Image (cartoon, rainbow, N blue to C red; front, side, top):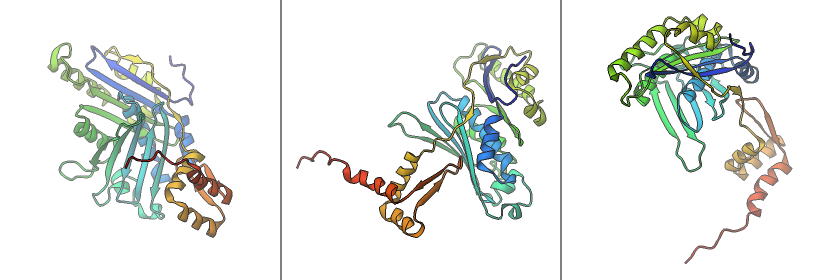
Length: 315
């Protein structure tokens, strides 16, 4: 029996049978409700942002990668941009930008109408390494299949991404409501002389997908991950591995905002100060407000003046 709190967030990595199939299950409760409270997302956006939050944790949990995973939907409908971010310690945050008249512009809250109304929407997944000097990796897929038909949900888009970019046979399911954001990812292990051969690995993956496909959306939302795995794979000898617990965490800070203002430049900052008396910046992820008055702004650019000159260059 699971001893997790009803409000706790859970991420489980698991492996089935002889090791041909791996997976990740996630259930976000406290973090997802905190994201909703801080973000005050428009009602039509909530299901997608919940699924994106769960998906970012699933994908991060499936990778051996030290960095931040950023999942973006760049829409060409009422949704302009939706972002979910999973940091190296599984801190999560999400935000979205949409048309001002979202409720009137959206006849129905399905995924194609929201993000791919004219066929130009796309999904962008960025892996931003934590180690200095390493370059980010970015994968991009459209929100339509090879025949140009709009994909009906985020899970279908991500399956296409995994097939094309990662080239790993994968199956996943996502679900979200006001209380929870959940997901299940099942993947065939990459070929490396698997025990029993490639044919056995294919059979084991096909069986795992068949069993996972019996899961209903309501069950995904209702069941704790440990109970869900027990019900689905009770004959598959599922082995569960200790994993970090997801949580809401925003990486914004006054220092980061100050750096952004420096990048805008002295003239732009002073122009805002003349018009408004201070520069107000609000974090789109957590709602934190940062205010810079005349004294703060002077400090921003005084630091540049106070920097000692660099070493002279040889002639």
